[in-house]
Image 1 (tube, one colour):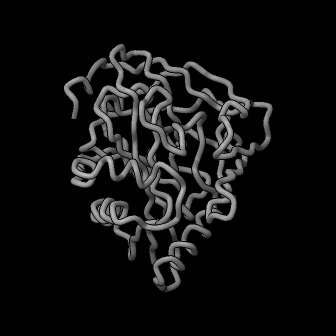
Image 2 (image 1 turned 30 degrees about the vertical axis):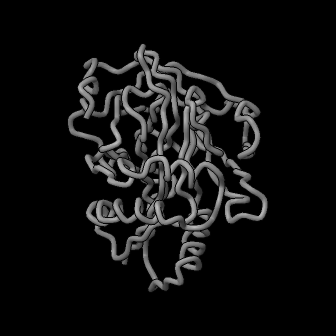
Length: 287
């Protein structure tokens, strides 16, 4: 944890970007500017998750922070950036090593019958102010990465890629992990919305168009409209030894207690480091 991470007992006031309230659905393309989407910004309090008591949890808010150092990020950072700087569908050795580091944490957290990594979508992102570049930029507005049909496809793709077979299951949960790979303080940290404060009317369909011919050529996602009821949380000054875990989808509560999220500019920081981050996902199956 950074020595600056406890700064300020109260929330920061920040502009959270949402899709325009008049829009009913949106399309985004990985190779087009995010500015093509109509966005409206709302100044809202964003609470310091490190200071909240009780601490946010996966079962209630839909997210939590853990100390979980990564030898891969520490020792193979440049390899991670190189392998994930452009879209691809193979499982690079460095990605497999990173997923293997995180798997025990997800197993420990969820208590599922089976947990396995979702292959093919390890993503590295950089702030627009960073020297490094990647094919994916930091998020431009509040969103959820997937909807139900997309999660079913992710499961089917992962089973096909790995040759794995699974027994029938009652429930599936997609757990997402997010870690910075640059030093604090970050210029555009990640904000997460308490899943209990989001209603179905706040969500609209979003279609993501990835590289043609890839498994991610078309992904059904969801975007967020503004509501004054939303309660936003962030973890200032994250270090590469920490990892955020949040629910991306839960078949038991497909409209709730999953974490809408977005990047935002932290105006409270004057000496900010351009953010780099890495994210990946895990599928948990329950009897």
